[in-house]
Image 1 (tube, rainbow, N blue to C red):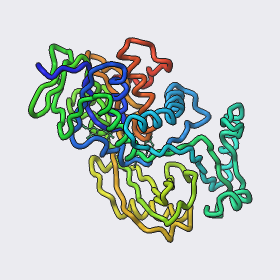
Image 2: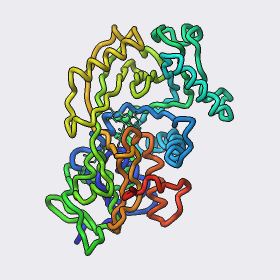
Image 3: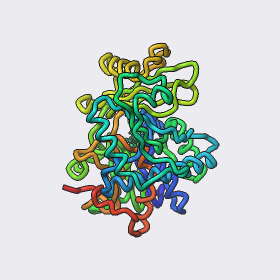
Image 4: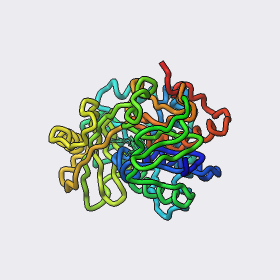
Length: 374
Ligand SMILES: Cc1cc2nc3c(=O)[nH]c(=O)nc-3n(C[C@H](O)[C@H](O)[C@H](O)COP(=O)(O)OP(=O)(O)OC[C@H]3O[C@@H](n4cnc5c(N)ncnc54)[C@H](O)[C@@H]3O)c2cc1C
């Protein structure tokens, strides 16, 4: 086979592009294959909320998430310098709405769990705000609340811009990018993966890294038993106000409102595993997201409706990603199944993949993310 690389990345979403950039900067010759255009699937469709882990959970995956969040500000500065595109990283904070007395008790337990941590300016990481203080601090919020949990370390990025910045950073790092080029199968020598085949050509590499998001069980159906990944549709509605109506992310469970600097507000998101690979916006989904937006921030009833879209999160049976060598498939690594947190986890995933390729022990034990786990 001609077309040699050290590493082939399959999939040009946030995970594939971040890994491609990282491996190329480490000195490897990297080729990336994307079936459509890079950064147009889940990584574009997401909301770009970078929210910290549940303070009561300290397992390896949560350490991994917190570590990735710590990398983020620097990661955004680096890709901006390399590409000239600003991903608009902003430490905006988050107000989690407390709608019942039990919500308040849970939030107070969260505050106790992080009592030994503080922000760089010395302020507490989590604080419970009373309805009275919210009337001064966030008069734009609904008053039908028992309070709000302020998480000061939540940030946001404009993920379509991050994708454009990553693309530029990969070009600068001399990653060879093949768009409109689906990988149709792995090239095998015995049981070793030694490259990929597109509909036109074969390409060889020492390692293939599978970063195909919701489509990860599709190239070779045998992988579905080792690392089953399924699409979980999520819809978002985009609104626009003349000015930014609020700063912090507003959240309630899996629902959130994200206000961008220019007055755009995202209301997200639905969770529809039954929708398969459909990316259709539905009347029911849009109606639910609009109703919640206006219930949480009544002033949004004045907003213009810009549009709606849906994306496919790569879901797994235990909600954990698959990161690492695929057992029984020498030459194949996985970095997929990041479900609701692929934007958050991309920088640390790239770091972990590089450590594994270098034969180093990664600082966080990612056994919980191994492909082939029971
Ligand atoms: C509505 C919504 C809101 C979200 N909000 C957030 C959020 O706030 N924060 C967060 O961290 N995460 C969020 N997520 C999740 C996040 O978007 C995903 O976890 C992340 O984008 C997954 O990245 P990926 O690169 O694995 O997948 P993708 O971005 O889907 O990229 C996979 C790529 O692989 C390509 N591909 C597939 N098959 C092949 C093939 N055979 N050959 C070549 N290329 C192929 C696809 O075309 C695609 O471009 C959200 C997701 C959705 C849908």
